[in-house]
Image (cartoon, rainbow, N blue to C red; front, side, top):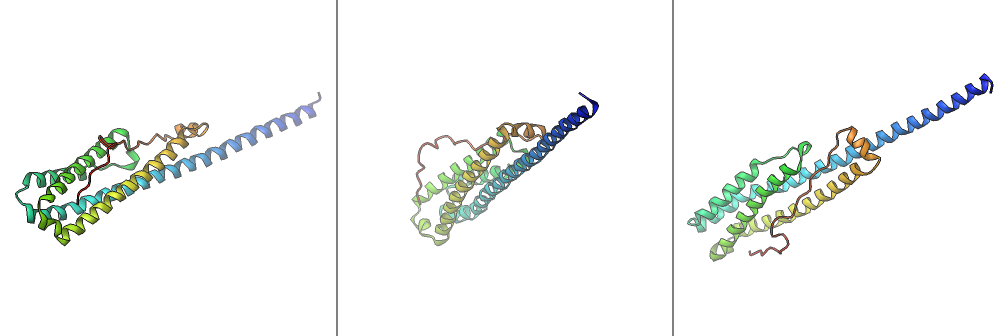
Length: 202
């Protein structure tokens, strides 16, 4: 084979290598951008979950004060709600550092607040005047609506995490994800007794 034929063959081979390299770079950029978009979706959804938990925490002092007016001697129950609220609002999670341990700690604190709130609402059954109080009824309705919103936002967060985790684990996107430090995001876990339907009394 003459030198000209070798040169043409080498140029052709190099062209193929350059085209493959460019295609790999473009794929890597596109995949990285998809992962970033999915991660931002998880972070955004987490903020919405926190927002609904904060809304619940903001309603609780008004609820406690309303109950105090009718059932001030239920001090232990009222103190438990106030204490659980304080604990739940002290725990914050930066979405960038969201991991299994921090999510479990956050979920546990929120679960304790839910239990304390449930005991408070159960106590109110013994106070007919309180149950008829317009302010109390409005607070109950807002609290019930907030619980529904929390459930909705947690479901949306779970869906976002599933999409993100699936994306970063699929090959060859997993290579791009590991090169850029993208890590699996944690999911909410069912709380103890979640298999039983809660009894709600208003």
